Length: 253
Image (tube, rainbow, N blue to C red):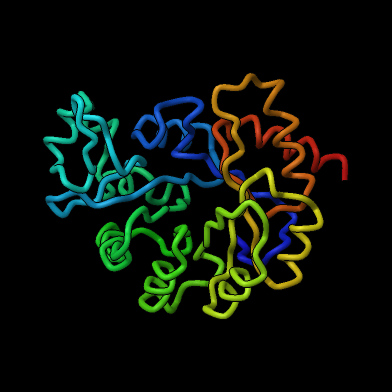
């Protein structure tokens, strides 16, 4: 894996495992991603009230008529509230065990103060550090992690920029604090923007393709457009289709 920006091969990252083929963030999704040999899997991590780290996206769930914060529940209550299984809402340690030495990961921290616990979980699992990237929408959370993973390449830390338009101020801060990757909404991705980020030395990724539930003929042009932009990678629901489009484009050059 090269952490240099502007690499010739666009990394295809399965969103929440590969949510177009199995329930997102479930063990089924990660096992399917491994089976079809996705380049990397992305997933969400948060902490629940019993101190355990789970792989789950939503910060709130509906329990009867009440909107309940996920971090106020223990694992048993969370599973019961959603009539879920341990495979559909796995612990981080289980996902790491499943993916270790089989597929690289992109772990998104969904809450503050997770950096130390995430780092410890990776160490306990013996997960190869070169197979890990960590993302967050909050730059301070990444800086906190950076302080304890000095051996990591800066590009292994990914700032998720959710703004509709590029912000010079935000980009400058990303560079100033030594974060090496930025991920932007797919609708913002153009060759010009990708080149601008590359010129600054940033690895650039895309997220939020909006492909879940679409047919193959609908997602192919979305994927082709992203690959053609020169982007370093993007998350998607149908990574096997994205890989086909990437490989098809690469044979033309």
